Amino acid sequence: VSRTIKFQDGTIKTLGFMQPGTYTFNTDAAEIMEFLSGELSVELPTHKEPLNIKGEGVFEVPAHSSFTCDVSVAADYCCSFVK
Image 1: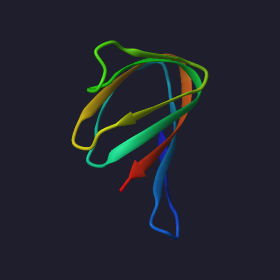
Image 2 (image 1 turned 90 degrees about the horizontal axis):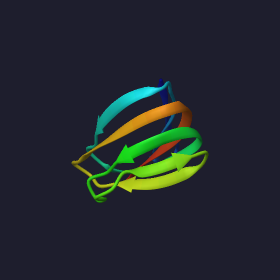
Image 3 (image 1 turned 90 degrees about the vertical axis):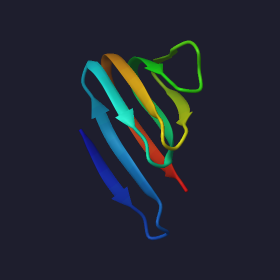
Image 4 (image 1 turned 135 degrees about the horizontal axis):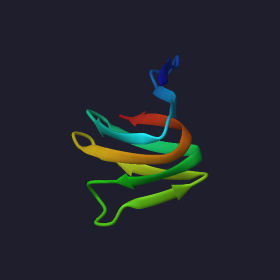
């Protein structure tokens, strides 16, 4: 589940919650993903090995790519879209 927030300066963010499961996302714009809680493993196009997050963690995703999150413990996140 995610909710989009649009700020007066044109900035867009999504706030979301992921149940345990595996999710693949495709990006148009570059993104900064900030996890505030949960446990997950993330496969990124810029890393050879998965990134493991327990609790808080941040990673960047290039535009026009994809990434996969394997969530083992429900997770809260904030996604910032980079212009």
